[in-house]
Image 1 (tube, rainbow, N blue to C red):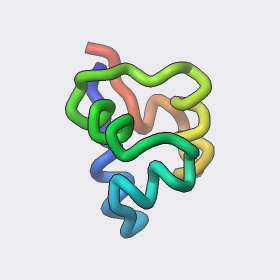
Image 2: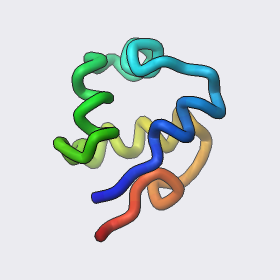
Image 3: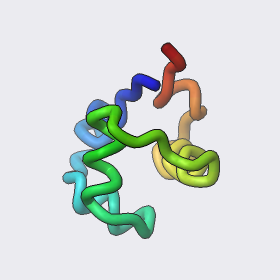
Image 4: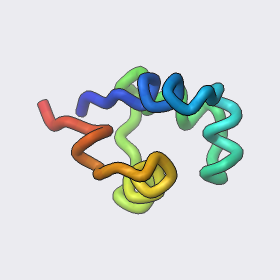
Amino acid sequence: MKNNIKVWRAKNDLTQDGLAKKLGVTRQTINAIERGKYDPSLELAFRLAGFFNCTIEDIFTYE
């Protein structure tokens, strides 16, 4: 699954660590999602979308 979390982080001037702290996950989790090594749970995907005030489809695209 492709994602553009890095773009959304940049728009909000957040580091991986900053985003991780706001979502209650580790920086390694954010890094793994961004690199496509880990697909987040549906709950985490919803939390990301809610945090960035967008839809899940705005962040993730299925390949």
